[in-house]
Length: 291
Ligand code: GUN
Figure 1 (cartoon, rainbow, N blue to C red):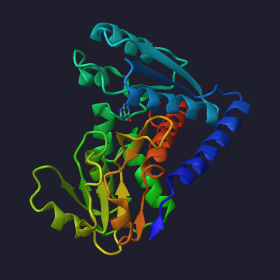
Figure 2: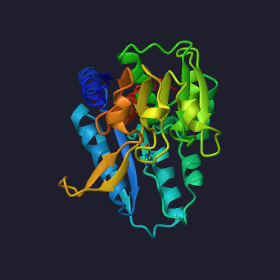
Figure 3: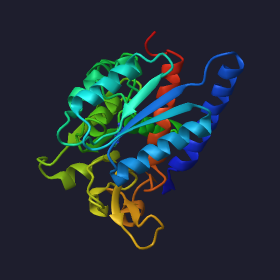
Figure 4: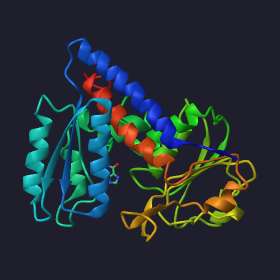
């Protein structure tokens, strides 16, 4: 079994991005600028946004954090989105999800200018991805594709099972895996799938994005399969400073004993997700997707 080291790969990519930013700035361009809107004080969201800002600093981007309290109105939030859409200094921005219940996430996502939608959540970007046009791809699927490429994992003609059909991971992941550059044969499994265990056990590439800790057990994995664990459930722990630790969707020890490659949690998909947002912001700054 080979461990897919997302942390090291992300570090390598961050160095590549930082070098490119240095060149751009030396040639007279402005630094790429990512803005993040954070509503409320959810512990997970606070952590994720803090990482995004730290990542920007590491690669030489400018970043802005815009905070609202939980009682912000949808109108106020949409006004800020509109302001960022029209701010020429901002290359890309994200609105951290989830949002409070009184705000429509879909409405907010659709208010973001697709040219600045570095999360790749706007239906224009999702639609362009589906038909293979240049677009911002959502960060987790993009990070996983990058890992498969950098580890030279054969995907052509392979049977891939994606467990989970969320808009930000499972569904876009399934589309990317079936595209011509990757050429896998894809099945999307979900809560109503019949005999999930047997289906997973036939996969050459198994991508677990279901959000249930240790859901994928050893008996659900074929000998020699490639296993990608997207799970990042925060569970209470007295072994860490933060009081939390991350649990993947895969029962690591029993699955690792059978597969050819596996991503750990933490240190697998997570760091690649973070780096994919930086990649999209750089693409936005260079106007490589849209002019
Ligand atoms: N919440 C959980 N993951 C994400 C993400 O990738 N982007 C945003 N905006 N919110 C999230």
